[in-house]
Image (cartoon, rainbow, N blue to C red; front, side):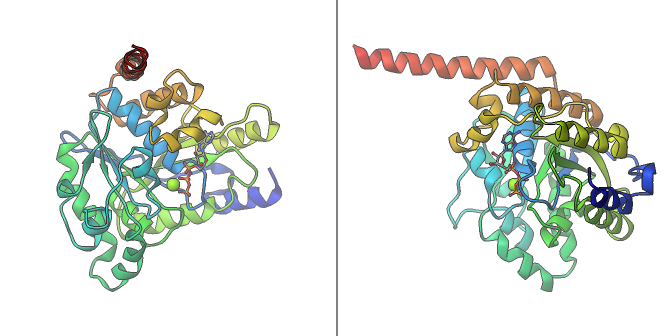
Length: 317
Ligand code: ATP
Ligand code: MG
């Protein structure tokens, strides 16, 4: 860790005291806990973590809504949800006030529902500037949907603009993915400042609930250093499960499948299943069963392989 990074993280909290936000809030009985997956730094694993964790939670029996709040739409396409420009999306929910249940899509995974995004959403950032209560547009829509899910995961874009602020106002807590790489902690002070401002002005009690270390490469000493620094700063908010850097995780999006469907035996899938168990425990998700999550993923893959085999033996006859 460089001196510069130390300064960045010191400025973020109270020096060596670490992060001292309020305790993480959960939704309560019959109301989903809303978690925003955020880090304004690009490419740290926000979308991979939202999609993979969402899939593992749903396979374990939780009712999950994934809100794609990034105009890039990577979470939507990563779950094979593609929409035409006429179909409703996050844009219509935020800008037009459309109810979430009018815009959601089912996915190949039972229990995992997506509010898809489209490039149109990039315009929302500009259009909302004129709107009344522009920071609360998503919160209003999400509050109305809380009864239908156990957990609502919001995949944020890599910025701290109005879309991300909307997520922070709608959320009970944040999950911050941090990539185990050089300069991993840079920019964290900016994120913490924004969370603090939202907490004071728009959403009392908002806190960083959990931090997830991603793309861990056991071969480098630096990765372990980052893990140690993040644990020292965030304490128990840093989850024990560390996500390894694997080729399979980077391949899954091009097959439009989450890792637990694409390759449930892979190290990446196992890491996200473990993460799901830890995360569910933190949130008190009683509908989630870790053993079921693993079993459903394995059974889904076995069924897919059997269908492929039947198909190819039909071809041979
Ligand atoms: P953005 O800021 O652009 O939204 P992001 O924070 O959502 O990015 P991802 O899209 O999840 O980050 O990941 C960035 C890239 O790294 C993607 O190509 C993804 O497939 C890959 N990736 C993510 N996690 C891993 C991992 N653990 N191992 C290998 N590749 C990974
Ligand atoms: Mg992303």
